[in-house]
Amino acid sequence: MLMAGAKKVMKKLMTRQQYLFLTARQRVESVISVLKLRLGIESTLPRSVMGFFAHYVWCLLAYQLRRLGQLARQAEQAQLWRLTPPLTGVVA
Image (cartoon, rainbow, N blue to C red; front, side, top):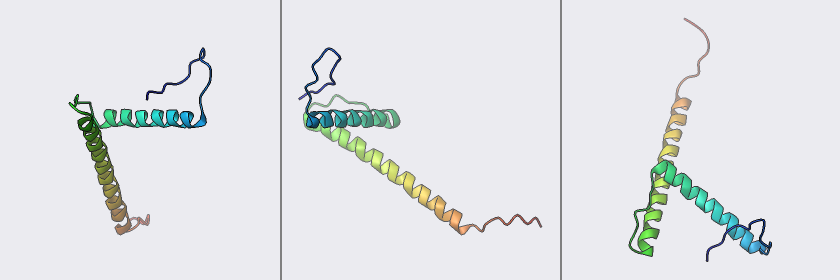
């Protein structure tokens, strides 16, 4: 089922659940847009619905693994900062 936002000339007959679905759809589309922009994800015109689904699952997994790598590097840098002695300001 395709849902679109209401226009000014349309009657406003939307239930609360439909409104929540519409806002969730907008969030999902914005996340996918960001993923396409940052990871260069493009649709490869899959031959089946499962192929299309698998493509996006792999892309989301790649994004998560990339983010996990960034968090690991940040943790390593934080550990290095803890190991270095603080600067005292005394010039020898």
